[in-house]
Length: 265
DNA sequence: ATACCGACCTGTCAGC
DNA sequence: TGCTGACAGGTCGGTA
Image (cartoon, rainbow, N blue to C red; front, side, top):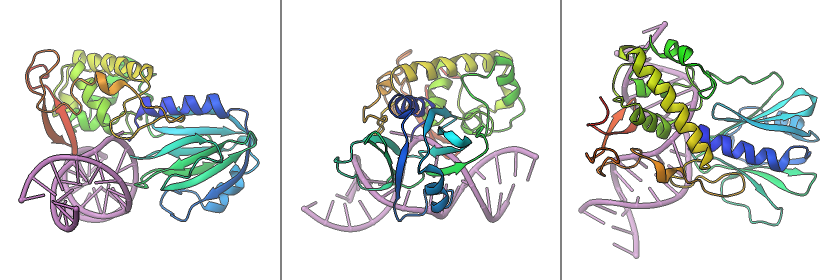
């Protein structure tokens, strides 16, 4: 589910609410898929630890704990990390609850169980480069050798981390580039345009609190608003906001891909 | 070395 | 009303 703007919104909300708080105890559910670290290591690392900072790296939420360890959470497609009061009802598919000294709880809920939790000691860097920090020159160097379709390359987290299906489609529309174009075949001008478009779109989406397509909500349970600004994602057979042509939907790299056949070349 | 493709899961919705 | 199949914001590992 959540891509960079959604994870950024969640991480910022978590930081506001739990930075400085301490984890008193941890409950872990019975399903093993969400756990990348052994349950006993998760419990041992989290219990008694103080949360110093919560931030986003790629699509990961990183809790920096005292004693130098980190709690890393990836939300997969349907994961949520919610701040809840102990009295509130436990949602279906709750896999972990961290009780905090303040009396609140952090709850990890994930119906499809594609999300992942782990604890680690060394600093987590993420698999690729940060889309909002990379320079235009580095961005061009990242893609100009790839034989993959530019859409697939944008989704490759080892190159850029944080971009997912929605923002790949939206940034290719703004840069007026067809999703199936081979990355290495793009001109410097086109890659520069894509770099600008991607950074603009990600910043606009963060300002709108992310996109709520089916069930995304932030740490406080609030939906995002950027879905109302989508130009192509989810708009197949609807008129392009710029030229009026009907938006097409195809499959690129195994993912549903939306584009305007007239604006994008 | 690179690039597709299915598998991993549950929920929802369209179509019959 | 109820069943079936397709599809979903992501990632990984196997295969070609």
